[in-house]
Length: 577
Image (tube, rainbow, N blue to C red; front, side, top):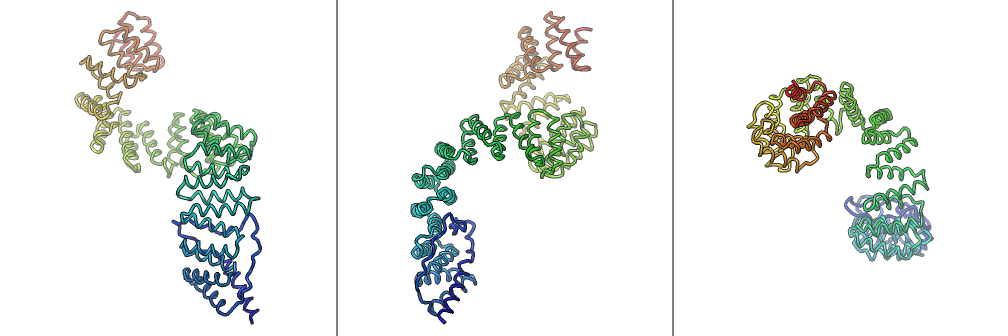
């Protein structure tokens, strides 16, 4: 009978110990479970010579029934009592597991200590106790157990250090965790993973100098380890980007098949705006994975940066044909390319394919604008009003695009009305104020124009174009010249390289009788922008100054580049009847 009970007991015990423990709550730091992939085989258990009494069997069955019915606290308590009585390491391990399920860390630590008493060489028990101590905030006690694991598994110290890092990375006091890891790593100067673990915790703690030093130690021990080279490059990118790039370049010269490292190199080149070199790296990755739509998409975006529109279009279409997960984005950029090629019909077709995603609103707006350009004003405005604007910035964009469509159709009064209605909702928006002011000027409302421009200057005193527009309006009407000059010179001070502002200042010098200064300023403006209005002004000043041959040549060159330009023809007719 006793033998029969022993068989039953052993069978039940093995079944119970094989049960997976319940996971701790999501907001609790988990205690590390015994790892089935232990780096060193556990020593055979030394089982006690304890007679299996009816009482022991009853208590064991009571524990298991309580566990199966969800009474975990009762099961943990009786299981621990049973382990203490029997001194059986299997029961002690089961008691530790059940205590862990309760979520009560002190009881878990007590149970694991009983397990250690019955199986002192178990590295699983050491790991669990270290994890429990960390969860309890007992860093020093945890490190004692970790040190025991390292000593017991010295031949596999690298693997152990990787596991230790995972444990310490979640410890809330990062500097303390770093110090603990640094102390644990000191006896293992030739273990690359020890330096790696210190480097990782140093980075998390904000000590990037230590992180870099330790990463370089890793690379000296294991130069082929890609994660170490990757971290070194990332750390260097913050202090010396070119040196970071060089680390990646050298690594790839030795290990050209490292795809993840090549991808990091390509992205790093992109960050440094080395677009051609970045495209070469992405192209190499694409050649190795010709069916990868993301590589084609990346090459397309870089080609756009390089203004290589043909390559961009080819790669976008390839990305689409290979099944990019976000086809709406590709369709949007193909629409943009079609606009750049002045193929508006094709652009509209692509934009209509944008059914969802972050570019859906922009695509709708572009369709409306292009319809407006070809004279379909009512349809364009209808589409704009139907566009799903989700925030104030998008609502502003609808107003500005509608006003632009109307302005380009010479419907200045209606454009002004749209902008004024927008100002009722966003009275201090500088874009709306500027646009409404310019339209007021167009429809013969100089008082409204001046009032709006002065309001804009009060709201945004560094708005160079507000000063310039207001000053030039006075110059154009040949009135309040001293005030006009103050305004345009203030604009030039704010934007010294703006050719439109240079033109205003140069014209102001002319009206003030400063012909030489006027010519000098207008020459600067025309060199920056061959605008026919600037050419008309410069030619007029030269003509009045007596340089008629040069004036005639400037006008003729500009008229050749801009045939039919009304302001240019008007000044030529005025001075060369």
